[in-house]
Image 1 (cartoon, rainbow, N blue to C red):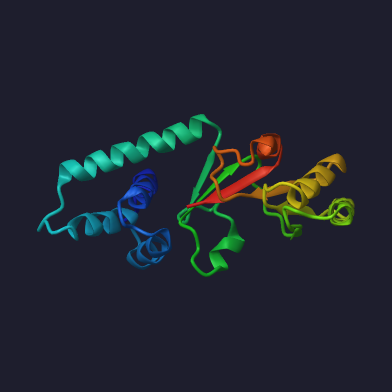
Image 2 (cartoon, rainbow, N blue to C red):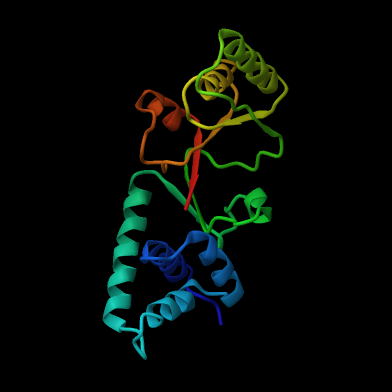
Length: 195
């Protein structure tokens, strides 16, 4: 039986919003069971009811569907562990995130290197990050960094000045801009967040 993809992704979002559910557990449960909807039903059952409440399930699914639609309307890519578009390198990590959110062009960058560092660098540190990022771009490598001030900002700035590709891995979500001064990087580079 083929699972309904939209329903499964919607159930995954509903699961991640469910009180007390940890995303690190969701991935294992969903991969083991083979269905986010089945796991959501089990979780809703665990609250003491003999049979999950269909009305509550429907309401949770409707809220999750509205979120998915809003993200899509805002230009946010949602890549679930069910999708071929889910970044392959993340499938191999401990505590694989069940959802990855992107803004920008998601590509299979086989050649990418992270340039990260302190938020309170020396001038020499900023200059070094700039040189490294520029050299990476000149050699066809995507520069990956966070979206913090100073070293991360220097790496993205240098990569973009050299007409290269950057990917910003951020912990605040792709629709929140922190620090606010780096909002432009969130829009100009590939931004990746997960839940």
